[in-house]
Each structure stands twice: as structure tokens, then as C-alpha cells.
Amino acid sequence: EADIYQTPRYLVIGTGKKITLECSQTMGHDKMYWYQQDPGMELHLIHYSYGVNSTEKGDLSSESTVSRIRTEHFPLTLESARPSHTSQYLCASSPAGIYYGYTFGSGTRLTVV
Amino acid sequence: ILNVEQSPQSLHVQEGDSTNFTCSFPSSNFYALHWYRWETAKSPEALFVMTLNGDEKKKGRISATLNTKEGYSYLYIKGSQPEDSATYLCAPISSNTGKLIFGQGTTLQVKP
Image (spheres, each protein chain N blue to C red):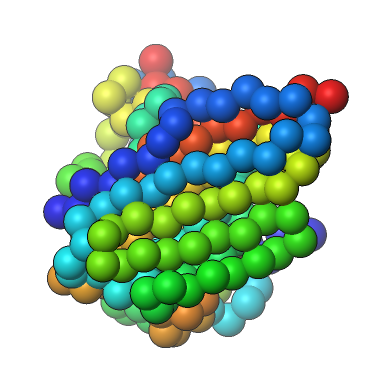
């Protein structure tokens, strides 16, 4: 049973469209993350948040933006989708502290045509 | 930026075989390491969080060790079963950034 939910699971969209990928968790975790994975490649951190109204960019530069208005919700937005944004996007959350593993969502596979 | 290497990239074994994978990384500038199992069409699942040199963790038939001085971690599966088929990801945490740095993973296929 998933404690972190991502929607949609799959999305095919035209170039120039604005999209929002949803991520919600029910565990009360302060820390949340967005990872991007291209086929055959590593997961790369693109955004993270340590709490409400706190967002930071990750190691991999991304044209997407995020917001954290509520603890449980961490949506990712692309204002104008391009084919280069085609990828898999994974959301994760964790409690504070280094001794806890991350809980991942099932991911959104985005295709921009 | 840490460079995390996992080997082998993929592995095919028969049911009942034991197997192990390696995760290597620069031995300085990190303070923990995670292992995840990622089954097809599912979410990555945390297996172990390892924080100390010489740390050993076990979960059923799966165990892991950590050597911080030489910069590697082993994941060992005893008596592999078809349900062990998945991609296994390691992710050290950089002490510079506090973030997980993922390797490309080892994909295991266990044939009945």
C-alpha cells in the first residue's frame, strides 16, 4: 500500500503545454524530493524540500519548478513542455535525519511530442 | 560530485544461485549509504541504510556490508529466487551536500 502517491502515471503531451506532476505523501515527512531518470541512466536529484515554503534545486539543472505549500504536497510544474523533458520523474519523501531510507512514489513517465 | 559505480551492470542467474553486487565510491566525503530494490512497474524500496565502517545488515536472504576506508559496499543474495529479480541501486550520501548520489544499478534476473 503506497504512502506516497504520484499522478499521472503516464503522460503524453504536446510541445509548449504546461504540465503539473502531482506528488502527495501521508506520512508527515518533512523532506521531499524529485528525481529524474532517463533510460539506462542514474536517478538525478532535480528538486528537494525540507519543509513548508522551503524548496531548493538539486544536482541536475532542470527547467521545472516546485512548490511546497503543504507538508504532504510537492507538485512539479513545467511551464512549457519540450521533447527534451521526456523522462521519468520520481517523487520521494523521508523523515528528518540520515538514518532513514526514502519512500518513493511509482513515478510519472512523461513523453513530450 | 561523487562518482558511484555499480557492478556488474546486469546479472542472470538460476534459481538457488547465490550472488553479490558491488557499489564503489570515493572513500572520503560521505557519511551513509542506502541500498534500494526496484522491481519493474513498482517503486524503489529501501533495503538498507548503512552508516558505519564494517556495518553489516541483513534482511531475510539479503545482506550488505560497508567498507568506508576503501570505498565499497557489497550486497549479497543467498539462494536467489525469481521474486528477487529487480534492479538494485546503491546511493551514498555526500557529506558535502547531504544528498543521495545514485549509481546506475545492477539488474538481476533470476530464472526458475
